[in-house]
Structures are given as C-alpha cells and as structure tokens.
Amino acid sequence: MEPDKVLEELTRLSEEDYMTGLLNRRGGMSRIEQFMRENPKTKCAFMIFDGDYFKKINDSFGHQYGDQVIVGCAEEIRHRFSDRGIIFRLGGDEFVVFYKNVDINEVSTKLNEFMQSCNRANTLGGRSLSFTFSVGVAMYPDCGTTFDDLMKCADEALYKAKYEGRNCYQFYTGGMVVPERDQFMFDLQEFSLSMPGGFFVYSAGGDERLLYIGDSLVQMFHCKTKDEFRELVGNSFRGIVHPDDLDRAEQEIYNQQFVLENNENNLDYVRYRIICKDGVVKTVDDFGRLVHDKNYGMVYYVFLLDLEESIFKEFILNRVQ
Image (tube, rainbow, N blue to C red):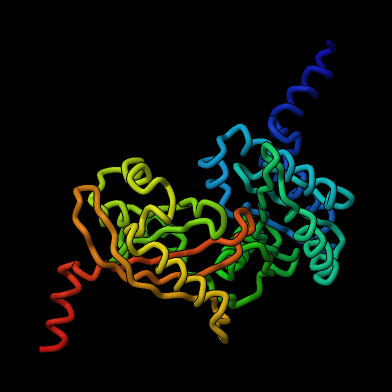
C-alpha cells in the first residue's frame, strides 16, 4: 500500500469508533471545530444523547446484548441525523450529534420523531425490551462558539432532561436551573436498603413471580442472602404471605384494585403474617401499588412494614409520651 494510503487508513482508524463505525470523540470534535471555524454564523444544534438506565441492560442480560443495543441505537441515530449531522460516539451509551443549518423548531420535530422510533422494543430471545434516550441540546452559536462551551451547555440540558423523568429532551437556556446532581447518586438498591421496611416488586399475573427484592426485605425474613430468601418463598409473592393468610390477603388486594371505586392511583393495603427463615412469625402491613411496566406488564410495587420492629415501637411510644 502506498504511503499516502497507509497514512489515510491510519487516520481513519484513529478517528473511528470500532463498535459502531461512527466517528469517535477525536474525529467528531475535529470535524465540528472545523465546521465552526468555517461557518461562524450558521445555526446548528449540539445534542448529547444519553441512554436511560443502560447499566441495567448490561447487568440483566450481559454486555454482549448491551453491545447489540448500542449498535442498534447508533444505526437509528445515523438514520435520523446523517443528512446534515456530524455524529460521533462519546463513549458507552452516549452519542453526540452536531446538526447543521437548523432552527429550534426543526430540532424539536427531529427529536420527537427520534423518540418515537427509538422507543421501539428491542428483541431478546423473543422477549421485548424497551430502551430510551435523554437528550440535551445547546444551540450554536447562541449557547457558545467553542466545542467545550457547547458540551458544557448541552450536558446541563441533558441532566435537566434526566431530572424531569428521562425519555425526553431539553434545550439549554440562559439561567437554566441546574438539577442537583446528587440525586443521581441514589438508586433503587440504596433506597431499598435504607428504608425502614422491606421493598419488593412482583408480577401481577400468573405465578406472581418476584422481579425485584431489596436487602431490607431479606433481613426482615432473617435470611442471609437474596438467593436464600428466594428459595424460602419460592420466588413468589405467594410464598411471602403466611399460608393461612394467603387467600384472604389476595382477595383483599383484588377487591381494592378491581372492585373498589375511585381507586384511581391503584393503591392497596393489607395486613398479614409472614414466616421467617428461623420460624419466627411476624405481622406486617403491606402497602402496594399496581402499575404498568414497559418491560414486564402489570406489576405490584410493595412496601412491607414490620409491626414488631423495635425501632417503630420505640418511636411510637416516644411520640405518645
């Protein structure tokens, strides 16, 4: 191969993301900066796309499937924005699109179309899995005239989108209230461990399979591990409830969810007993809510309160005194 061809190939490889075939950060940054130098007044949109809860996909299904999701999302972004966009993979599940010669209204239209298309379910062994993006947008040159300025503004808008509930986009505006990023340091696992009671999620139909259990629930049943707890209760809500209370508890939940009028929030409350690993019997209050999950269908989110827990008894006694 001729020296010029070798140099050209090496340059291409140094600026290409190996997984998606898009530009990498180095290549994308170089092309965006060149465009801005040559077009200082052309209105453009600098957009950061960040996958919502992508870590859950890797943790639940493995990195191989996670890589497939990344490649599929890259193709969708390329399909939607390659007509006028400089597109590169920032890293992980983050992408940047620098969309040229565009106004805010057109950006909104394009992002709405993207949100609808990318919210399609991915298929995993015959099962559907939903995956969405949050997007932060900074308009050039209004929000900045350098790559770093645009990145900073788009990043603040991105976290505003995540703060507002994810699966949406936000434009950066002067004086934008930046969300408290400390909020993103907390996750469901930390909440479930620190809450003064047990927390779990289970499927509303079929065998009422447990989909999520918190560490505090494991401790409530005097188990050492989640596997031990799942084995104890047969990985089902039915195994959580004392056998003598099960029929009544399920009937009360059904009546509150499907018979009781004006229960628009799909809430339920029931009291029953549980049997711990060591045979200890406890009475608990069950606070539940029936919701529709995009991946699992109808599920119950449940919080269990141990009525015999000394911390609550002491708290109540102190309040009474």
